[in-house]
Length: 98
Image (cartoon, rainbow, N blue to C red; front, side, top):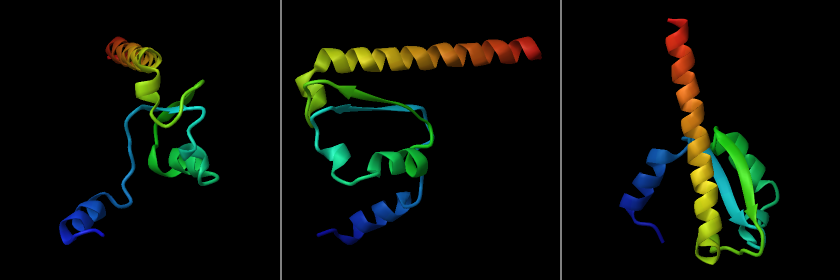
């Protein structure tokens, strides 16, 4: 199933968290987020420490980015712009306080 190199690579990240801002985007008709009850909440509390939102795309399944590319692009652009604006405010506030 897994070779020794793959197992070593998996161990490298075992127990680590994702500590950058992120948004979870999924198709509302995708079975993945629902296959294990509580999995999304666990991901938010134990793996993705800065999950800033969850976006459900209507009429989309597992391949949401292929099914609705314009909507996914718009969601990503909005998220990146929001993060850039917040970062700019933090930098501005830091320079005002020094």
